[in-house]
Image (tube, rainbow, N blue to C red; front, top):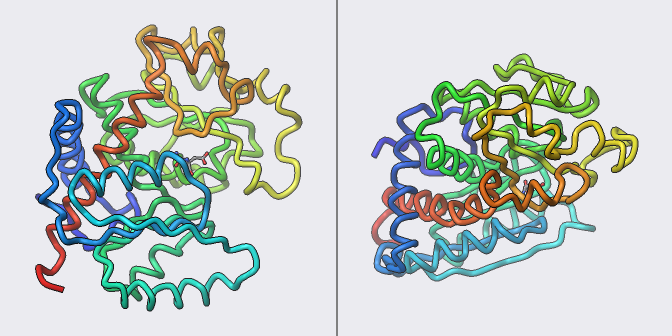
Length: 311
Ligand code: NCD
């Protein structure tokens, strides 16, 4: 197994074999999960701490489930950062975690770079579960696994990532992963929600939704991340839906067998029409959640192999 690091902080920097190996291992966990079997000896005696400074449903519970399915002792810590100096809190937290002899630390934080900072201060292997607008590497892995299961490959596929790209760590991690694996990535959204550095990312930029969706194999919708917006970048939810919301009419220009994805949480009627979100053949949103558990098991497994045996 070729994985190059003690931590998983970002997709950027990983090479195709690293990603392919992680996806292959995740695929085997997806099959194991479907068979109803577990592998509870793999992380036996290991401590996994979920440290969430931001809300989460899917990501936190799937890391918890992944850790438990592999036999780790899992502890969930939810921390509010409302009134404290974030730098100080993080470093204080690091010494607490070291004292607890945590082996695997999953962290979500509103500030980009927080997991990288913490990784320098703790003994544990650190997994980034979303940091600010920077990256959300396990989301990109689960998205890639879901795509691969439906399309058989990543190379050469046209993937349209649509909506609020600027504020989305999901978009950033997906762009890195998919371009690394040879997909043709388009980003589609209003000019106010397209990042200034888009050209550097190796993607095609579209501000017209139908032009961006034409011939796409994969349509990935993103939530409007209003909590990260400064000022009014979008007129109104209704107007946003009219121009950029995914409905049957807009989806009709994508490939007839294209799949529709969303990392959740969804705003129905804003970026996606309910009929599309719940579409029995085109929507793979439920499968994304299932693959999330498998991918997180693979990541925990890979990182645990590099941990010292006796702490
Ligand atoms: C995303 C996140 O938190 O970055 N959600 C998730 O992890 N599934 C996307 C979002 O919040 O819109």
